[in-house]
Length: 161
Image 1 (cartoon, rainbow, N blue to C red):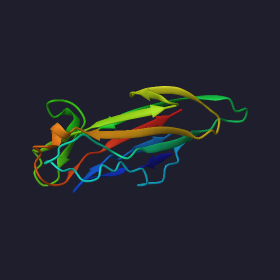
Image 2: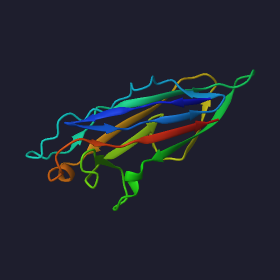
Image 3: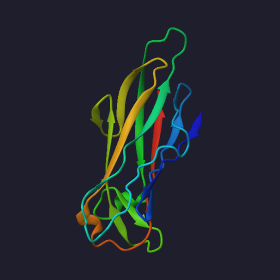
Image 4: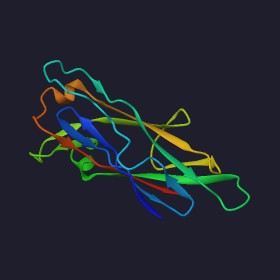
């Protein structure tokens, strides 16, 4: 079963689209409604240029097993946009009007109170809702001289049991 889960995040006068495109196998699925997980950075003022954390959001998923229950091993991968590979490599949003302009950002994922990186493998109890918390940050030094306008990025996630 394939499930597309879009995670838009507003970035000041710009839009950071952290799109969680999730492919769910027969026994794992994301339950976060489409478009409901939002990283909200608020306004970015280059005159003050202070680090700007986003309001946290989360992705939720459940894995189920055939009769008998028990632990399910799952595997999640992150698909980064082409923006990631523009030098220097790292998470960055691209300006929607001037496509040669980028704005770096930081993103952190946690599961069961521990920071995780992708690919990520873990176990979950049968039918128990799991939560991956997502936080983001834009450094003031990164946007103080950024080109004016809207920025966006897309990140995809695949989950398989």
